Length: 279
Image: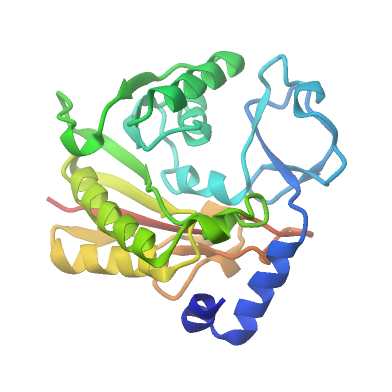
């Protein structure tokens, strides 16, 4: 709470805390407009089911692969890339695969990279259920040397996950200050590596599901200060369903657990920034 008060002020910190005490709705990303459960359509196209929806595997359209579970905030990073059809895009730290599926559904040539073979098996299972394809690479991305550079890259970096406490209350207790120090160091290394894998003119979307600004806003600010051949690309309201209250003063996305999506309240806490490689 003290860190949130420092980053956002006491009033906002109190709202974050209260939001984390509530039960999270279930958001779905739709692959098609075919059979799916009844729910509330959010401004970005996600479908929201309120608590009490039952078993996920028994919901309409699950067996047909018409949708997958993905919080509305977690679906936003891919939307910042716009039309991805035909583009070569790497999804770094890809598991469990929601963003990989979004990219593949948009027609991208996706390379999904993760260090965990077990988690990548889940990505493959999810892709098969929804009838989509991606190249799967199990490696430590810091050691990875792909044959060609990418048109765009999505990095959902390992983080303290404090934006998902309403779903995973244990996140509040599992990460200590020294753990976050180590995570911040890893985030910087991953961001630097990711930047080296993009073509000139290419796009890099960096995101974390952390509420700590040192894992988001400050991480990107430091990267831009040290890498003059990259520049920020401000988010426009049209990219996020006209939800301009999610865009901060720097033009990045900062979602908080009490934020609204249309007529519904609540989403995971995310920081999302889009960066362009100039040369």
